[in-house]
Length: 492
Image (cartoon, rainbow, N blue to C red; front, top):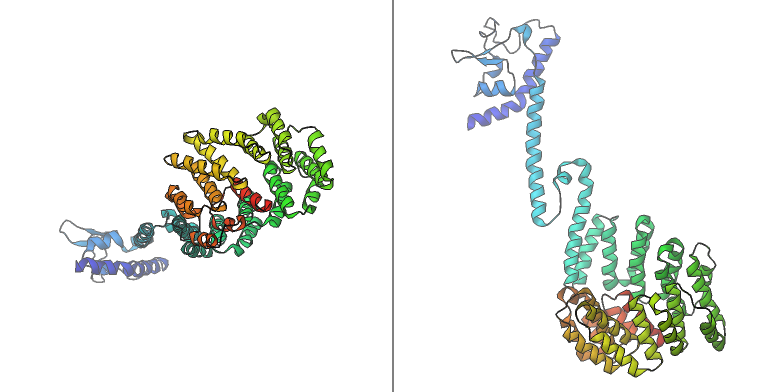
């Protein structure tokens, strides 16, 4: 073993020394004594001893690593097989040896690093370890590790710990879109004052992902009740993203009615880059707001009905706002097929509530709550969202019973329905129901359903307000968010 180690260390320097000496010998025209031949020998092939191998434990190892001219003869003696004029350096073996050593070192260190990182949980690939051009991706790998860690913490309801992990991830990969997006969503709970800064930066730095950024930012603004900012963002997106004009138009009109600020509506209605259908709805809305009460009601009834679904829904909603439930029901019977089924049911229940058609309302609610499976989940969701805006203790009790019956479903619609039922119960002062609804919620949704301490503190002061509810329930679907805000705007 010692002989092998000695030869190993000799092989690190000997190739450089003897190849250099032989190179000088060749450059000088092979005059004088050959540097690797024993001076007392003849220099003839097969008879001349090699000076270079004198101290090596294994001549065979020298021949393999340094100079193949050294060969063993029939007597078992090692002699040079070339005449002095044939001696030359073998740089290829030198570079191959060092390449092999370098490969072993890099492979050992890199392989160990890869195995260690994979064991810890980093989703690193061999290419990212061994290829220098991919080393820049390692920051993203580390960022994803801390982002996954944050996701697990969020599921456990540990928002502050999740925020610490995400802050590390964002520091390591400051331009990573997904990390910054998740940081904004966690900040929405832990540090809401920072959220708009993050979304604004994402909006400017990642123009290719502005649609995704805008949707998340829009939901965040709604969940925080920042309606003036909702109007600003919706106005911008109506120009830049005409394909989704219905979403942005609804947000703009809702914010304008809640804030009673119509300047953004007027500006968008005059912008020719906004889709014609959207401008038509905006123009009609402005006519209503500028008219006297009686004149506006006449406009709603006598103006020809639009065939565009959102414009039709807008007309029915304005009729309900003006208290004309009968005309709204008539339009639903005549044109309701143009609307999505969920919108038609939502407006039908709202028309019954506004028109105080208690018998019809209870009958429709019973029909929705009697469904089973996925249809039952969506029925419960529609009823619970309706009760957020139009409360009824009797119907709320029926919804609670339906939630118990559908507990084995556990689908996404059921989770949303429980969130809506939670809001309706909290706004209805049913504090003793809330723990039961939390228990019905699947574990993956339960941690995000509510920041319990803040809600308990609010309930201890009496009935919770919709604005407070927006700050404690996570997450709110877009439709549920609107329902809670409508309740707040209505002042109920």
